Amino acid sequence: MTQYRETDRLRVVFWGSGLLGRAVLESILKCKVVELVAVVSKPDKPAGRRRKLRACPVKEFATAAGIEMHTPRSPRDEEKHLRRMAPDLGVVADYGSYLPPVVVELPRLGTINVHPSLLPRYRGAAPVQWALANGEKETGISILFVTPEMDAGDIILQERMPIDDDDDAVSLTEKLANQGAEAIVGVLNDFLRGRVTAVPQDHSQATFAPKLSKEHGKIDWRRPAMEIRNRIRGFQPWPGCYCFPEGRDGPLLHVRSARVVPFSGIPGEVVDINRDGPAIAAMGGAVRLLKVQPAGRRVMTGYEYVLGHDVATGDRWE
Image 1 (tube, one colour):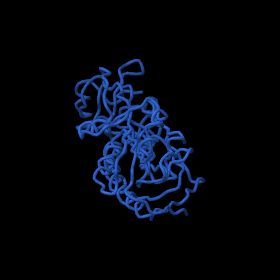
Image 2 (cartoon, one colour; image 1 turned 60 degrees about the horizontal axis):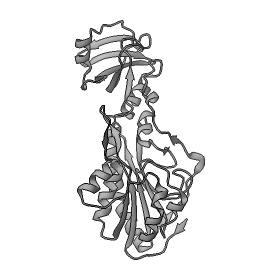
Image 3 (cartoon, helix red, strand yellow; image 1 turned 30 degrees about the vertical axis):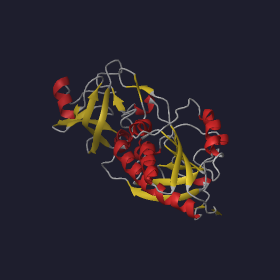
Image 4 (cartoon, helix red, strand yellow; image 1 turned 90 degrees about the vertical axis):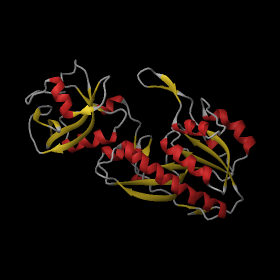
């Protein structure tokens, strides 16, 4: 266990891009013990069907709040600027890129990260998504020191949170963002008072949450029904879970919401249709498609899709 000495008002450099980062940045701005000396985020990226450049949530917030910020192509590009700022502490939340040691070690007290999982479980880029996809009942926030090994640093604080059955990646990310935003205030105050202690992780218990790709969203009806349903929850809004009702050469269908129902059949077979939507057979049950989104169209109920696409029991989906 390591203890860190008391300091004056904290000069903080913040790194972030996503919704968790935005929530943490908002909280830092309200924290009276902090002097925010730099905000570093990501360059605008193409998004949507028209691939227009779009700012990330942190940049949107910072711009609206009139905060000067930096969006380097590489974190290394910020080294000279940060040396001039002479920060006491770096805070990372949902930045989305590896920070090299030369940047991490530059602040006098080091750099800390707000990570949305109970480390050492779910180290990596997509902890919220994989916790849901794996059917976890609990998650939380870890605040830890940044080290060269990903999400492996000593833990300053952890707070737990139950995962509700109706949570998906969107709702759970919002909850964890709020939890992280509240937690960072206490940690910053502890740094100011020299009360921070950090405990090493048990690396033998580490699990990983790799970055998602489009291939992760392909539904395999041969898998357990509950596993499919959990992946549908976890992989919203991207990559989303999808299937091919008209065969692999036909248009894909994204599944936005589903539940498991007690029907059996050949994997991929439409085994029941009611006003909630079609039920597709999987291992150990069937998956009722409650909300779906055909390629290039709006989200609709599963039953609306049935009515518009001549779906019948006995059809085979891929």
